[in-house]
Length: 435
Image 1 (cartoon, helix red, strand yellow):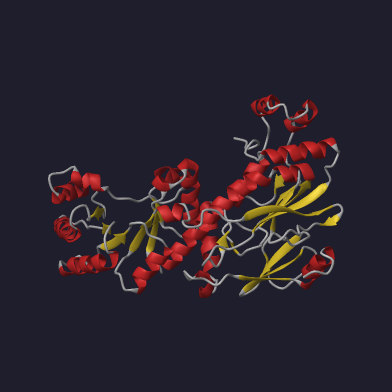
Image 2 (cartoon, rainbow, N blue to C red):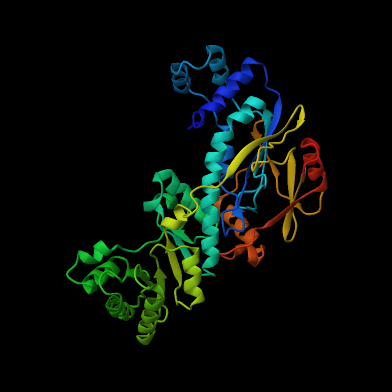
């Protein structure tokens, strides 16, 4: 489905004015994120492939045009130009899953001005959210220090689209699985889950509930043990675990969802080990985030996996990230926004990755390092095929593994980027010598 009307009104009013004044020269826009949130060391650029597909498929339907006509804002002549709208420009982008820092061009669009302008809101809507969730998930995965992280966020997501795209973003950043069954079907993400407290409460006793559950799901099931008394629940889980062993089966894990997770996990681990159930894992949930997970593990909590919901799927406390889309060059040369606290870097750029920092340079410069912006679309046609989700995940995890620990810790140092001398000189010329 085309996202032609998934835009702010001013994109259309600007374009109508451009059309009226015959101003449709080639212009270059760059999408980047102004600032890293507190404690974040990097972003995981995400949503890029979705955004590019949407740009390639952007068309105005008869219903779209009828709605716009009903607003009595636009001339029939302008609306007829929208009837044949199709993106014919070029797009460069970093590979999806790439760790980037503030002010890194993530997507670069060079096209007739009206086409490039019209993409702004849709690109930002797609990339801001997915990048935010992928980045938050990466922080959580790193805080888990190799323990399994599962996305439990669907019920707390901002409706279906956020739950779906959030599950995809979390998987790219290293989440092992999701509770979201539809995301599993659509994206091929492994799905996992256990039962709710209501299941336990539906049987005469906790032991009866556990026996009923493992009878239906005998392949290493997980039992939620904190409906009434966590230690007593662990005792019942151990009974069921030993009964399963007698049938040649194995209990997979127990889950803690409330209380003092540090103390309870230690007591439950000791109880399970004393009964010979050393292979049974302990999974924790309960409003977790990267700070809590890191603290639990640093204090020696014997927890093997974490189910993270609200704070993963919403990136709490980061409500939004400051992604923007700015004109950087047109037929009259480099362009630069100069307003206070919102200054941008002028000109079409490339970013080069070195061992421990990036260099932001003008596109004609050749610098040491690996260029991150690659050609994806030329003359309105894809020249880089969309990679599979698993390829994106593998690439992203490899890139993150190469980052310094200082940018991955929960109180991170931002990943460094410096500007080339030519870019700094151009900025000073435009600003009349101001730094």
